[in-house]
Picture (tube, one colour):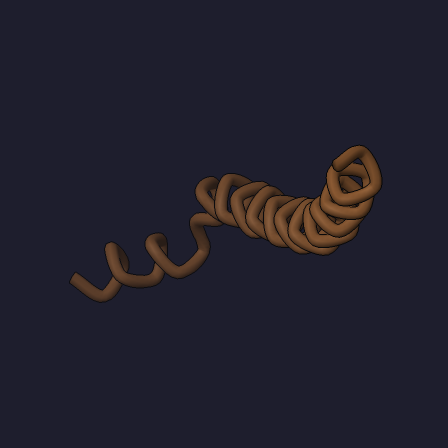
Length: 54
């Protein structure tokens, strides 16, 4: 039982997948934040254009 637990602790095969998942999640959060900020600016620009056309 002890040797199985020790081999489990030494096994790092899943660590890379977890790291890639964390990187992808970080990139997704950055994209969402950028799109959210840009969306607000675009909305105000379209409202200004719409009001000037009326």
